[in-house]
Length: 273
Image (cartoon, rainbow, N blue to C red; front, side, top):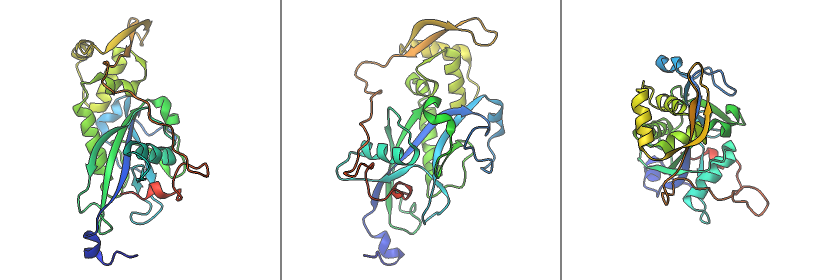
């Protein structure tokens, strides 16, 4: 059944899908597997930093926006929760398995589908350590990009990414977010480096140390490591507050009757706006 002309399509109930923004810490240069040297020029100030944020994007294989890059996403299933749908869409496109997804925002402006059937996207986001990125390796139609050097994007996905980055910078004072990027154990100097990579700004180290320790969410492991010429530094771990629900495991992937991971169309997750 067709949807008629553009005016008629705009009056139809919108489709609803999920998209996922995954952010990971990586090198400040493009010298990693899967990097796209033809992407837009990045802010040169970040090139002097050791680390910056990266995210995986999927090349679209259908119209509209054929060949452009988009966030991993997919449609909804009546038998799945929103979180499960986001997890399944991410797994089927990138093979990433983050331990935590958080609902970021819902995007549903009437202009975002560019004349097609109106589309509402419920966006989730996650922060992952570099160990989960498989060294930023390229996969089928999937490539990692620096967050400050995005390619030509489909739909309004560039604005969605900017929204996620803004949310992360707003919450930089919360050590649980930083520790998701640096790993389970870290020094305060390493955590400080993550904060500077996220904000793109110089942060006073002494004040940063005081704020992180005053949060009450860091505990020493009893170990120390040497960082360059500095004296050995204490190693910390993040301890979540009881009952916060900030750290939880996602449910196992949902499989269809034939053993596949849900849905009849393997390219379905590449279609969502």
